[in-house]
Image (cartoon, rainbow, N blue to C red):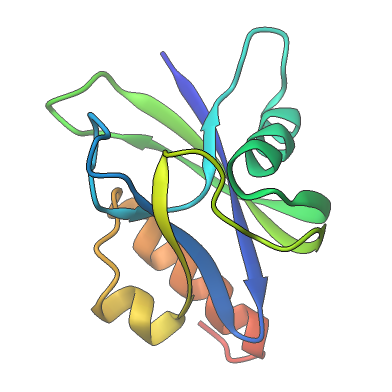
Length: 138
């Protein structure tokens, strides 16, 4: 079963999301977290750090495991997602390559209301992170 590691950068009560390119086979034009496939011989944390460097040009310095879920999309094989909350990093997030077309910081309310997320399982997880970041209990 494929496994994906993702990093949720957060600051000032917001979480950074990346809009997937319209050319992507799975979930085109949907918001998601930067991240990607865990390669052979890698653990999820190593993959998350590598993917954030490749996709948005930041190197995580401080993070914690947030959770794991399996996507149950009937149109694809099951995929296990490993999500990490990154609250300290080096570099400024920017688009690299063509996997994503936009980066944007979302508040918890915006995540619930307007972010069309690729995986619905991310909605609650990210809203909690954004609220936790401001000290508001989820």
